[in-house]
Length: 360
Image 1 (cartoon, rainbow, N blue to C red):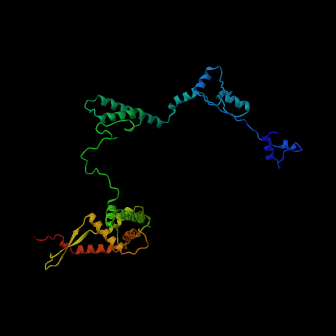
Image 2: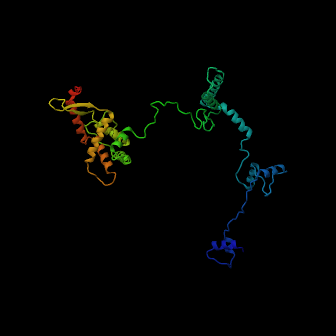
């Protein structure tokens, strides 16, 4: 008895033993069916050529080269359902079906193929006409464009200039040509932040610490984004055309812009000393520009935010107070509305002094 059979008997029986009196228990054991390992050899090109020159498909390892026919024969002998030669499609039939498939295309596919052929023919006509046209300048850009058209006509794909190893004569070392000088006044890139965000950040800055002001500005926008939708005041109306309340937290920059522009005054009152006679000052209304109006509104909001108590501790308390004041402005609860109303009333009272000019 081998060691493998002894280990199997020990694992299968109820108790471990070396010998047993009766051999009936050995007959009842279900010994595992061990299948010998078959190694698959991969023939190289040289071995394949040697096999082709020999009389039959033999290999050095003793295993014949397996084909579909031999596999089908083996399956038939072993009683397995494998490859069926009767169900296979011959190669000539596949080729004929591929050739005749164009006749059975749907109408839209045939139309697309026809449009594609017409496009290629049109591109070829443009290329041929441009080569014979004497009025067309043979510049590098024109030749490059014609080459791209021909490439589209042949392959239907436009390659990148970098992959085509194309160099511009006027811009060595650059992927594309250099811009024409002078650069137009409207050719500058857009700024990173919104103009009102930049202006408010500069107004929040103290002692030249702009990084602190930018951090506070980020906290303010984040507080506006996470705040619940505001409730509009029935009498203190915002600027016309503003979005609904539930849209404002989705756009914190628009939220900030709406609050500032809604309380921004249209004018300021300038006092002209001695203009009223007898040394009395004369109140003269002066219109303001957009940046001036926004600056005055931000200063009012800052004044109100500084008077509010802190609800928590930390370096984000000022930003939270400023964001709360913005929300109060939109909801109509901020005292800045009263300041705006007083300025407009004073301007209405002194509207007769708009055209005043001091005598020299």
